[in-house]
Amino acid sequence: GENVEQHPSTLSVQEGDSAVIKCTYSDSASNYFPWYKQELGKRPQLIIDIRSNVGEKKDQRIAVTLNKTAKHFSLHITETQPEDSAVYFCAASRQGSYIPTFGRGTSLIVHP
Amino acid sequence: NAGVTQTPKFQVLKTGQSMTLQCAQDMNHEYMSWYRQDPGMGLRLIHYSVGAGITDQGEVPNGYNVSRSTTEDFPLRLLSAAPSQTSVYFCASSPQSGANVLTFGAGSRLTVL
Picture 1 (tube, each protein chain N blue to C red):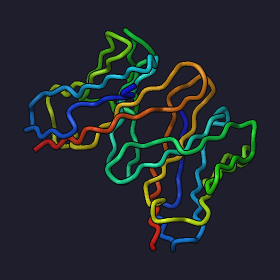
Picture 2: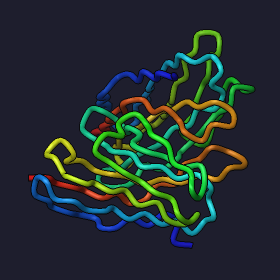
Picture 3: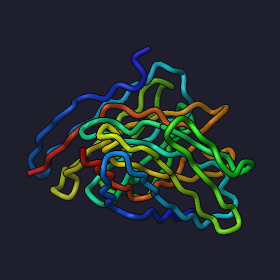
Picture 4: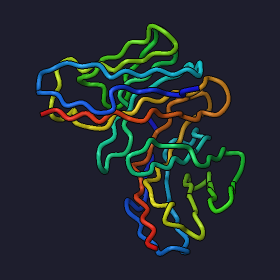
């Protein structure tokens, strides 16, 4: 089955810095890569996703890149703000499979 | 649209007690699933269902039962609670068509003493 590795487990940055979270996957058939954000005490919510037919996708301050050859994808957050502090999960799934495999999460702390 | 509704939000059990975590969705999603979240372990899949009458095991199914008699409801049963089942539980649903986007419930925090 699919295995998703996520690094780092904890990331501490100063407000205004950029943050990068990286994930690798094992199943070359995976073609859908969502990212979920979970604020303290809240439910995970989708913030951005990418499909294997594109290499990069942006939405304001967040972007995701995908390297299919190397089987890794990354979340980039620019100009971080304290409200970006949360746990971020990457995931991977195959076309037609509604069950994603999650990484273990990255706790992002943005210091004012 | 309420989305995915989980009850209860908090529960304390004694070892050996049984209970049911309720999950209901009003989005007519075919797929529903249960995850447990433990520190440093991410979201681990317990059981899932692709439609009414169909369920299957995920990564960590032991100690849990599920059923799916309707499209809307997907309860998770703990038959004999153990301290190792102390966790936060999330129910999630997603549609069959389109993107595989999960909508999560608010979570249920369970403590087993």
